[in-house]
Length: 99
Image (cartoon, rainbow, N blue to C red):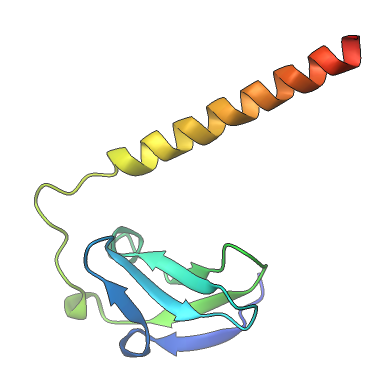
């Protein structure tokens, strides 16, 4: 895995409503990494629009606390919705192939 750049977390933008850190990507989109990922020891932020990745330099004690009521149900629901869309797409392709 190739790392485009190493970035200090202080240089990233934090969205406290989404619990996500962002950093501009050369492609025009933004690298992103969630607060939960950082607390889990992850340090690679990915760009959703290209293959670039950055390494986030941080100290765990400098991270905001995850709220007590925080859970990743939203992420699980999003993944389930994506899985359902993929299944529907595959079914449609099979129906077209059979026709």
